[in-house]
Image 1 (cartoon, helix red, strand yellow):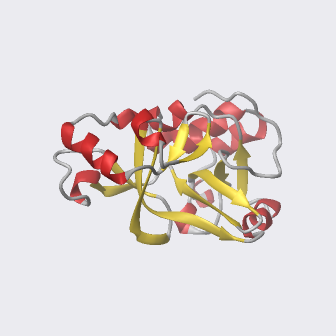
Image 2 (tube, rainbow, N blue to C red; image 1 turned 135 degrees about the vertical axis):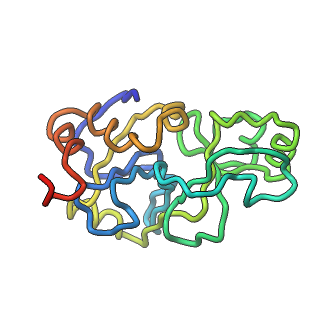
Length: 192
């Protein structure tokens, strides 16, 4: 996991990672890492990168052949929707740029065609049911209340290659200082 920069960031922007503080009381976001795909005056949304579902992509999409990629729970909002992020040249048209080398969505027919041919690189795409969303000013209020830690400058390839079960901890460790200490907090403080 490489970081291009890290400093105490108080204002999030598109492409940042949000890491839940160690004792965030919302079980939907316990030790999560969220890729922030949009952040503006109207609100914010993103996808939880490290919460796998029990399903594979080919179990929820029809007519794609065998595509046994993990399906992630992007968040508690509209879990009947399917989303994907990627760094796949054929899908960039029609997708929305999150940051250099990282896009959200794209032409769904092209996506299905790549899956059917077995030509979609699983290491350059991630699929989600649902998303995480915040209304106007809600995310900033949560950041001001120390619910989220902002990491900026993570290379997109690390999003796809890092094991989800260690992502939260490994990012905090790489951030160093007090964040490295957070990475080792027990899930249940009573077990300390």
